[in-house]
Amino acid sequence: MLSKNQLGFFYMFISVCAFSLMDVIVKWSDAYPIGQVLFFRGFCGIIPILFLIPKDRFINFYKTSRPFLHFKRCLAGLIALISIFIALRNLPLATVVSISFAAPIFTTIFSIFLLNEKVGFYRWLAVLVGFVGIIIISEPGFSSLNFYYIYPIVFCLGLSYVAIAIRKLSSTEPVWLISFFFSFSIMLLSFFTFYQSWIMPSFKDLFLLSMIGILGGLANLWLSQSYKLSEVSLVSPLKYLALIFAIIFGYLIWDEIPTVKTLMGASLVIFSSFIIFKREITLKKRVSVARHE
Image (cartoon, rainbow, N blue to C red):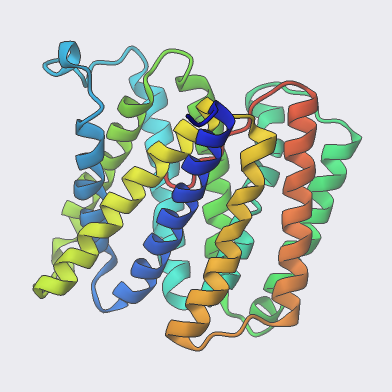
């Protein structure tokens, strides 16, 4: 029988694996319009959630006392999701994953203004180190006017507000309802992209596109379950396995080899977010930044 920490470790591991596979499929799907990919992410992402709705809530499961906060959370999540999709299609996989690790840095900054939290010297130092890491990773893109490097940063900004909103929502709302509204909003947004002339996928492509939604939905549920069962300090470092997966998949599928600057910058970003997590644990707070929650 596994302990809670061991179960949490397992859920975090399969969550990272699911997110990594989803990123690979999103990068592969560049032959399809982004709106069509969003539809599969939203529609198929609802499927795992349906199995979590309690029987006594099945008729009125959508009712909430905080609709405006759900709206803001969904809006920020949509901005983050579209940004990461664009980034994955136009930048090396390892580069996008490296910059995405900066989300806790922006969450720390937002928490000052949105949660009135006090941020001490060590966390400010971590924020500074993280920004240096982002500059090192992005410098080649900025110098050559490759504005696609902006999108992973926008993703981090959107995801950081999502983390704050979920922290507020989770005090009264179940995880499955928060996830449902987001997946439903993705599907609604995709309906406005019919003008892009959606492409009829083959059976194989239909399966892969559907897996974007299923993997995204499951990954977020597993991530939440991991934080629920185990200590954040134990499972959070596992998230950095995503960079190893990104390097492996990027090399095997697209012949992408991360530059020395990317690896140096990624190391600083990971180090800074690790400091933030450690300080949050010291202050007895739980930080959960779900990627596409």
